[in-house]
Image (tube, rainbow, N blue to C red; front, side):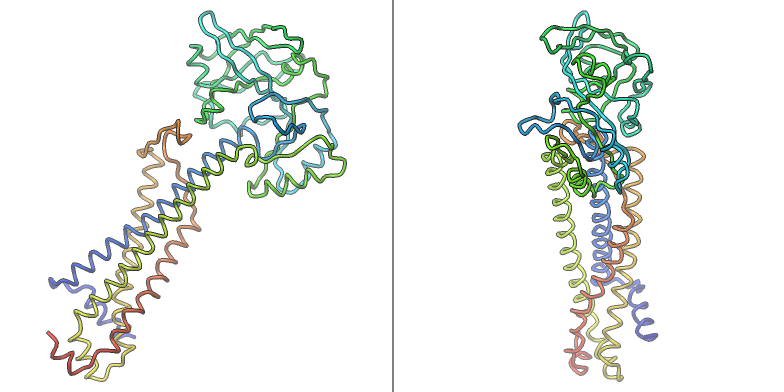
Length: 412
């Protein structure tokens, strides 16, 4: 092993100009690119999927409970249901549940002296924790504040709505609600926050306010709500929790539970396609890396035919000579993996700091490519590449067994 390692090191660090030296450098560069591409691709796919899904979850929660309406679109008013404190307590105790809170929606028209815009006002109660939506708040704004005496006369609108109506923070806006009898009821609210999710369906549609205002406008009872939104600690348990809630004893027959994936299948199907494309790219890169390893070692073996013949004539075994080329190639692979990892992490850090990779927000729901580094995936790429390269390198090294000492020594 020591002799094989010594010879492999001399070959690897030989500064003589030769064709194999060029191939080694080419192989090194290919390994660096392969490792860097895999890590960067995984991190971008992770970041993209996480950023988009979190926008959906932050706005609607992970599981929604409401009156069963088979033909209801996602952006529409709900049929009211009676609040069920017993069910709320049971849901709170379920494994993986972070919080549960009521909500309701109501169509309205926002009007300024020169412009008007239709919105769907989504109302919350004081139990809602706006930290889920904090990343969407534009600088200087805040979420609505609730009071005990009456409904809050504050509203949060989107950047799109603010631009359309030429509104800014602390402006007073006239809002018209359609009452159940068909009449219009005007009210004045103060714009205290301006949000932006990057999802056009949300930004063009929703304004956020007090659920008690919606309850009053709809002439609902004090215990009537539009439904419940449930936030989880683990998004992978959405289906499990949704089913558990639905199967809870005394769960109202006319209610239903739906996960965000069921409510917005188009978004999550799209994310699945993005993930599949990432896997396809990684598969191609892996195949190219394998071909690169095999080609590199075949050339190294062929160029060192004479050396192999001399070593065999001196009594070296086939395996000891094979180890020379395997160790030699391991040097290349190790350096390639180390540099490739460093390059990829450097690029990802630069993206997180500067956002130099820009996207069209209307199509990708974000203006810059999001990055999420999963260190377990990075470890798998490093270890997997190393193991795969060693296994693959065994294949061409068997050429050593076919070399006959006499013919090899005469080989030029």
